[in-house]
Image (cartoon, rainbow, N blue to C red; front, top):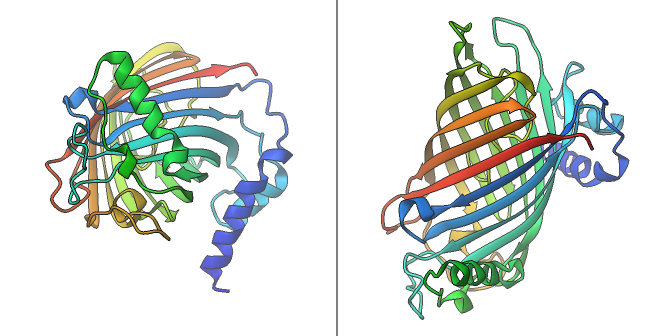
Length: 341
């Protein structure tokens, strides 16, 4: 078995078995509950990636068992200085064609599809204190779920549209078929530039790279984020987001003073697999020809105070398939709060 395959198998084992062996984290640090809502209502459209919801919990440092840490270090993800947290999530994403009022969806447009999943991951923060680059963040996550009618995306969209008086989607009968799915992702982010504060105003730059492997998504990605703000939080790598996206995290450290910052970033992905465009893996059904290279550009604002962080992100995404009618545009609202349990 090649070394890369052995490492991937070990990563899957670490994530799948980490949950039952958790130990309590330090009392001085709290876990973080995060809620994310992403929707294209801000663009006035109802198409492509049209909605995503994610609820996640990030444990305090020290909640990962020793053997999981040892495995992460063997995978060269964590060092002895890395503080590791465990993250759990539950999410749903939905995708629709350009015109949801058509009874027969066009064959050359994105298929209807939903994705319902649970996730577990390890979040490692390392302090290096070298060359003014004093932190980096490693995230390893496994998502497991289902694509198709069992994702309940049809019922969710119909319920919400009836509630707000929007058009009733007509084509969900033609959605992707039921298929179990998984995605294993790894992301590394690090502080490449950080300035000192001048009258409370600070600036930093955070590049990132990563990859995803699975029957739902397979891609490699890289990009970066710039932040400018008042009382800029040190241990904050951006808000939790619905993947694929720029990497963010529920992890952040509390600070007594009020902080606010604006940010802008980009992420480029080379996509080998996107089930929502390529169609089902083992069954015939609707599909379109995907674009190999996809990019996200985003800008937003974040406010932090004590145990709370509230963030809004506006995202522009390049076309994901051939013949797509323009770029995607959607907003993401993320609220994180640290709790004592």
